[in-house]
Structure formats: structure tokens, C-alpha cells
Amino acid sequence: FISGAGDSDLYVVMARTGGDGPKGISTFVVPKDAPGLSFGANEHKMGWHMQSTRQVIFEDCKVPAENLLAGEGAGFGIAMAGLDGGRLN
Image (tube, rainbow, N blue to C red; front, side, top):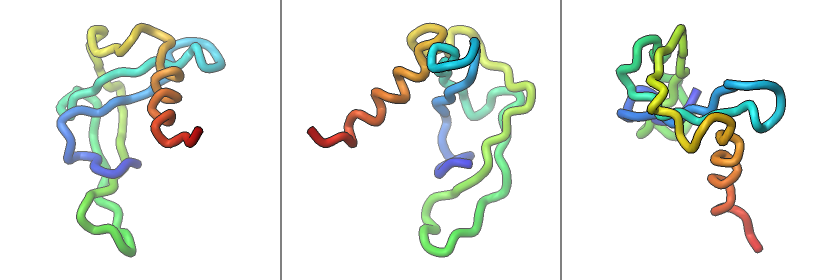
């Protein structure tokens, strides 16, 4: 599940496209209307009610090859770069 599921038009998805380890992970941009992408019911939370939280369900989801970001196997690096902004030096 993720915050904002079902509300956004595009989703950045990390998926295993190769073997074990970090080089087997790729990143895709998946549009909300992609065949096979659906969302579960909104989760009821104790506090934060302004943003939905739902399951993201991929069932034979079809994503065009041109939606691959930075080449096959680059997903782990993209994920780690996203964490760099939160690191203190």
C-alpha cells in the first residue's frame, strides 16, 4: 500500500526484471489507467485523513517498454538516489 494510491495519474514502480541483487531491479512509470493496475479500498487510519492510503494491485499489468527509466537494472540506484536528500553530512 502507498499514500495517494488511486489519486495520482502516474506511479513510479520498482520491479525485479533480472536476477538477484540490486542490478535485477528496474524502475517504470506506470499510468493510473494501465491495464492490470488497480487499487484496494481506502484504509481507515487513526490520524491522517486528508490523503488516501490504499493497496496497489498489479495483476498481469501491461507497461510499455518506453516507460522504463534509465535502463534495465538501474532501479536500485534510482531508489538510493531518492534517499540522498534525507542524509546528513
